[in-house]
Structure formats: structure tokens, C-alpha cells
Length: 77
Image 1 (tube, helix red, strand yellow):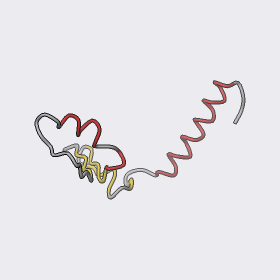
Image 2: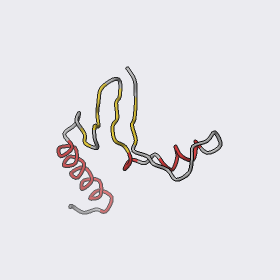
Image 3: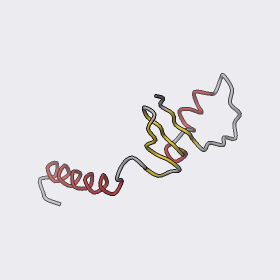
């Protein structure tokens, strides 16, 4: 199984041995990710999660964030 990430990336600067690290560090951003495959399983395809319930994860994250910020600030959200 392979881990692969496919990006839509159209740089103005050509790729070369001297600048590939800059392209990888600054050019391959999350907003440019089209597809992600991990252990042979497609997790993200055509800019949408296919292996996760994104709404469920977002709801859980909001609940946990409220608890954390409440504990840090000594209040309830």
C-alpha cells in the first residue's frame, strides 16, 4: 500500500534541484490538495473527505474546544 497526495499546483517558478525544497515547503499547501491516499485507502478525493464524517468531526471538535477554553478561562461556553 502507498501513501500518496495529489496537488493542483501551478507555480510561476520552474522546478529545479536548487528550489524543490522551497516548492515543497511553501507551494504544496492544504488548499491545493486534491486527493490523499493512505495505506492504499482514499481518504480525500476531489477536495472532499470520503472516509470520514466531516460534520461529525467538526461538531465533536467544537464541543471539545468549548470545554478546553472554558477550563482555561474559568468559565463555561
